[in-house]
Length: 305
Image (cartoon, rainbow, N blue to C red):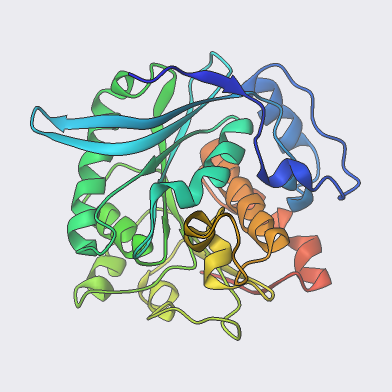
C-alpha cells in the first residue's frame, strides 16, 4: 500500500484568489457547514482552496472480489468526522488523473473523493454496472475505503460518457445521494429508459454548446422526470470539465483547448453542488450560489424541474 501524505492543495483553485473573498478558517466539518449555510451562498467562495489538508493515495486498489480490483486515486479530507464521498468517473479515452485537481479541491472542502479508472472506451453501460458495485461495496462496508466515510452521502460524478455510466448506476439502484454530470454525453439505446428511472437529485454542469456540443446532452434534462438542475458555463469547452485535461496530461501540461479559469469555474460549481447535496439533500444552496454568476453572464442556460 502506498504511503499517504497530507498536502495543501497542489495546483488548481488556490492559485486564483482574485475573488475578494477571504479563505475560511474552521477546524471541523460541522463548523464549516454551519458557517456556509448561515451565510450567503456564493460560488466565488468555492473558487478558493478549502480549509482542510488533503491526504492523497495514488493507485489505490478497491477490491470488488478476490479476483477483481479497480484502480482508483483516493483523496481524503483531514478532519476526523465522518464525511461524504464523491466518486468521479472519467469519460471516453480519458483517465482518473484527468480529475485529480477537482478531487483535491473537493477534499479540501471536507468531502472525500475517489477518482475511478474504468475501461476508457466503454462499454459505458458496463462501466455503470461496475460503478454500481463500487457504490454497493462502499455503502455496505465504508471502512474498506476509510472509516470516516459517511455511506449515506455517496455522490456520483461523471464526465462525458462517464455521465451515461453514472445514470446507469443510479437507474440500477446504486444507493447514491445524487449525481453531478460534467458536460455529459449520452450513449446507449437504453439511456432514455434509464434516465426515466432516476429519482435522486441530479445537477448537469454543462460546457458552452456554441464552443463544443456533446452527443445527446439534451437527453438528460428531457428524460429525467424531476429533480434535475442544469446550468452552462459561458465559453467553456468540453475539456474544461476536466482538471487537468487528459490532453494536457499527455502533452507536458499544455492544452490549447482549455482555459484554467474555466476549469476552475467547473471545479467550484462542482464543489458547491456536492456541498449542497451532501449538507441538505438538495441542490437549492448551489442554485442560490450561482445567482451572481448568472447575473454577470459567467453562467447561463439555468433551468430546473
